[in-house]
Image (tube, rainbow, N blue to C red):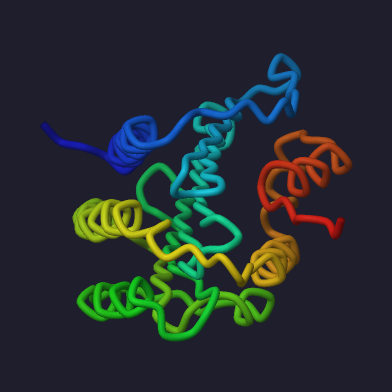
Length: 229
């Protein structure tokens, strides 16, 4: 059977959700979106467990109207866990991935999961690496996987690494939680810089999402920051 980019992307989504449902508990964040207003699918899945504070998968499926499919996936450790923050994003056109980004973003230096990701990233040879914008450089690791113009075979190869990384991360996160330290500031810093990305709001606005609604969505669902007190 010949798979196209969207077929593979949907398999990635399905298998990612299967993994999360097997080790985490689904959570209702009570952020209401009236999907009847839009001519595309916008789905969000949130999870939590004793090992992770929050996992969020967002799917934007505008293939019928804009020939684009997007997946955003992020896992946050508990605040007292120095493990890196897991991130994976796909922007898929009909025939190629225009943007694929995957990182273990460091909370502290010299974490074993970061060392593992460095080695995994070094083993992957990208046909067209993408340069990173300035907004993300303070938070993403030097080993971040950032690729453009990704075809079917390269996408399959990256997905092998991605799922290896996902299983390794979920089996290792939460094992080194501190009774003394917390990393709230580091998590807030990550969320702050993610919200400096102007391309995501621009894409959603172009699909008809109200600017204020999406700002609230970024603050509450995509990259929530913990307030003092």
